[in-house]
Structure formats: structure tokens, C-alpha cells
Length: 329
Image 1 (tube, helix red, strand yellow):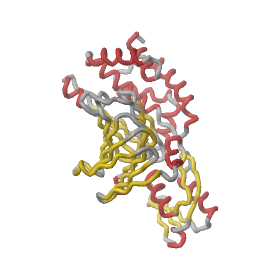
Image 2 (cartoon, rainbow, N blue to C red):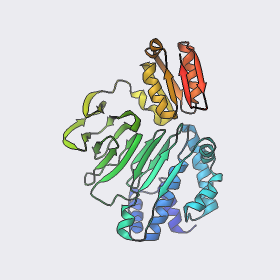
Image 3 (cartoon, helix red, strand yellow):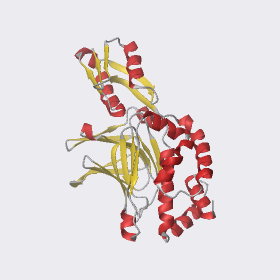
Image 4 (cartoon, rainbow, N blue to C red):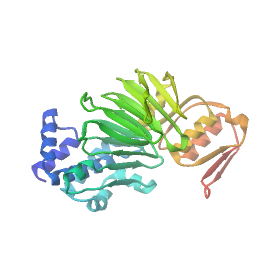
């Protein structure tokens, strides 16, 4: 592995100083081959972040370093896929579900800079992505993030479908914008916030933990709301509702924990359907209004979660695996 390979690997392992990071990015900017190598390594790193448990991260990093030694310079996606067997955390993902990572490359500078990468996280998983500007994004189950490996324009724009937790590196000259399929956009300079916007719900919710964000409708940018820390906004059918974050633990999903506090079963079921890609029918209306306070590990199967809830408020359970439906009565 030559010096440039080592520098790129150290970049993704957070072992470079801010000056070293900046110098490396400037060198990469001038060399088309280095850009391609950088993006391939970046996407591989994102894949290696796929894990159902936080405690798997140290083992993942150890396997990642062994993996790098084996493959030397990563040249294309075929080589990467063939060698993924050396990363234990990826084995877990391949064995349990599907993942998709795609990108397009070109030798033309303008097209290259405009290219996009897409990260899709399957049901029952989550992923962490380190963007080239130093921002970190956590993606929840059944979520997709489309982003540029290099933010070359006056803004840093990403497209989210599903749920993402963002820790955005501050840059007053290049605002960070999260676009959703619901026509809602979240604009920030540098902050920590969560956005949930699954296409099935026709609803977008943004929660702010630190800093400041501006939320607006793409077709009506003048109708915007600026959030302060510990505030959230829910947008549904063009209407905005501002409130305080009543239950911060709901954001623990990025740690692999799903939390519900005094929540009606019908609302919990809606979330579980999103996370596990399953249809859950609550046929008993009284049961649907029962309230639960509970926490689940993301590694728990949907059947395990339902059976735990069954012990809190007993109900009849029917599982139709062929139709992918769970019926509660």
C-alpha cells in the first residue's frame, strides 16, 4: 500500500489532522483517479458501518483494518464485493437481508462532480455514513440517502427517504440541505438533528437537538419555520405543527434501540411496519388504543417484539409468513 492509500485510509479512520484532511482533499480534487479511489473507499467504509448493535463497532474496525491489508488498493466494486467475506459485520448483513450501494463514474470533470452515491439500509438494520465535509449521517431501517461524494456547489444537498440522524459540520459559506420526497426541505449550517420522512406515511418530522435549522416546503419556501434546540416540527398535507420534543429517547434508534413511552399500540405498529417491512393488523379496536411503554433492541425480530408486547397486554397473535402479515386480536 503506497503513501496515498495510507492517507486515504487514515482519513476515513479519523487519524488525520484538519490540515492534513484539507491537503488530502485538495490533492484528490486535482486527480481524477484519486477521486475515483476516494469514492470507492468511502462507499466501502459506509457498508462496513452496517451493524445491528453499537458494540459490534470495535470488532468491525478491527476487521476493516485486516480487510484493507488483504486487498491493498481498492480498484472497483467487483473486487470489493469478492473480498467482503473478510468483514464479519458485512457477513451478518448478507446473511440476514439485502443491501444496495450504487454509484456512477465518468472521466469528464463536470459529470464526475455531479455524480451521486446512494446508500440503502434494509429492514432491521442501520448504517453510519461519513461525508467528505466531515458530517456524519445515521440511517435507520428501510432508509435511503442520495448524496454527492464531493460537495462542489454553493450548497451541500442530500436526499432522504426514510429516517436519518445528522451531525453536520459547520460551514457558513455552504449550507447543508436535506430534501425529502414529501416536498419538505431542512436547511442548516452546522447542527445535530433528526428527520423522518418515510414515503408510506406522507408525513415528515424534524427534531432539533443542537444548533438551528430552517424547515420549509419546496413549493412554498416563504412558509418556513426556524427550530430551536429541543423543538420538533411535523408536516403533513402541507400543514406544519411545532412542538417540544417530549420523548428524546425516541432518537435512540441510532444506538440500535427503539423506544416508546405511553404510546398507543396502533402508533407503535405503524413504526414497526416501517422498520421491519411487514404488515401488522390490529383487528381489536380496544387493543389498538392500549398504551405501552417499552424498549426493544433493533436486533430483536418483529416476532420477538410482538411476543414481548403480548405479555404486557395479552392478545391473540396470528402470523402469516407467506403473506408477510401479523394479525393482533
